[in-house]
Length: 308
Length: 308
Image (cartoon, rainbow over all chains, first blue to last red; front, side, top):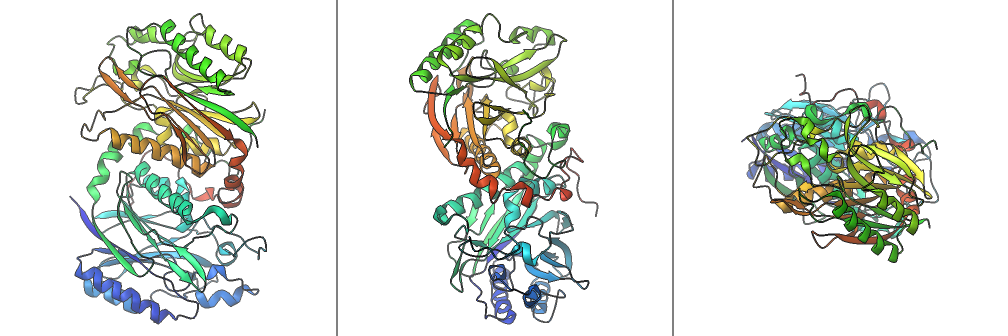
C-alpha cells in the first residue's frame, strides 16, 4: 500500500469583482479542513484565483492581463504556500500565467509538502475561439487569451508516487491520458471550469455535459490504470453557470468520491497508488500489447476521409 | 438524415463440436429476421464461425489450423453472401484467416449490399499470451495463434457512409478509435468474445467486466463522434462462459440498444450518420484542436517512468 490521502477542493463561484485575497482566504479555509482530515495532497481547480474570465471579450487583448499572474508565488498567493508548508500538505492549483517574455498560458502547478513547486503544466487542448462569435450564446475565448502549452504532459516523481496534471478540455482527449500513461502516471490532477450550457447547442443540457465529463475521466483512468482527481469551479459567476462534478476516480474507472454541492467543498479519499499495478501489468501492459506501427495519431492533425 | 438501419446479430455459444454449417444456418436465420425488420447492415461477432478456440492449447500450433478459413467466401460461408445479395443487406463478420502464404490473422470483413467484400480488417491488439500459462484459470492464447494485423485500421466509404472495423480487445485502446476517427469514421463495427472471468483476477466478476466493456465503447464513440455497433458471442462454450453485452452506441456515447440474452439475438436501430456531424465540427474538430506536437503516442511503445 502506498496511500496518498487526497482532498479535491472544489471552489464555488468567483465573481468578476472578487479580488485574489478573497479567493485565497477561501482556499486557506479548505486547506485547514484538509489538514484536519489528514490529507497529503489538496487539488484546487483550473484558474482558481479568478473568475473564469475567458467568457469576457476584451477588444484589446492586453486588457485581459489583469487576470494573469506574473510570478508564482506572489504576494496574493504566498499564504497558500505557507499553509502547505505549515500543514505538510502538497498542493496543486491552476492560474493564468504571464511569463517575463510576454507569453500567456493556462497553467497549473504542483508543490511538495514543503510548499516548493515541483511541477508545472501548461494547458494544451485550448477549447473555444479567438474572435468574438455572435453565433454563440456566450463567449469561450480561451484561444484568444492563451497560447497552447509548451511543456507537453510531464509527470513528476514526488511524495512516493508519479503525478501528472491536465486542465479542463484536456480530459476529453485520450491523447492527454495516454501520454501520461506512457510515463507511468499513477495520479492525474485535473482542474476545470465547465459552463453548464454548450454555447453551440443550447438544448444539450447539464446532464449530458456531466455524462461526457464523467465518461472522459473514467475512460482515461481505466485505459491508463491511474487515479484521477478532477476538481471543478462551480456555480454561477456573474450570471454564467458552471457545472460541478468534482470527483475522484480509481484506476479501474470507478468514481469513488463526488462533491454534492456547487460551493466550496472538500471531498477526501485515501488513494492506494499500488492499485494501479494490476492494470499496468496485465491488460494495459503497454510493452506487451501496444502496436504503434499502426497509429496515425502523430502523423496528421485533422480528420481526412478515405481516398476512395 | 443518412439513416442506416443496423442489426447487431449476437450469437449464442458455439460448441467445439459444432461444424460451420450449423453456425451458418443460425446466422442465416438472423439475416432473415434482419431482412424482415428492414436492416441495411447486419454485424456478427468476432470468430463468428467457430467456438472461441484460443482458449484451447494445441501443443502443435498447426493443429489449430482446422479453425481457420483458407478463402472467403468458401463452401461453408457462401450461403451468407448469397443471402446478403438476395436481401440487399451489407454484412460483416469475423473469422480466423489463414492466408495462401501461411499467415494467421483474426480477421473481419464487410460486404456491400450485393454481397461483395468491400473491406477487410485484421485484429491488431491481440490480448493474452503465447505459451501455456499454468498461473491462469483458463488460457487465452490469441498471441499464439494469430499474428498482429498488418492492415492498420482502414475505413471504407460504402453504402453512403464511412465504416470501420475493430475486434474485441481493440476496443479498450483509444488509439483504435482515434486512428479511425482521423479518417472520418461514422460507424465502427466491433465483434467480440469476452470471457466473463478475468484469467488473472478471478474475483473481478462479470459486472466489472461489463462496465469496462461499455466504458470503452462509449468513450470511443463520444471522443470520435461515431456510431458503434458492438456484437458479442455470448453464453457457455464447453463450460467456458462468455459475457454478452451486444450494444449500439450513438455518437454522443449513449447506448441506444442492448441485447437482453446470451443467445442468438438481433437488435435493430436506425442510425443517422449525420448525427456524427455536430461532434466532428465542434468540440472534436480535430483540425482546430489537436496538438500532435505533444504526443509520445507513436514514439514509444512501453511505459517509462519519469527520469528524476
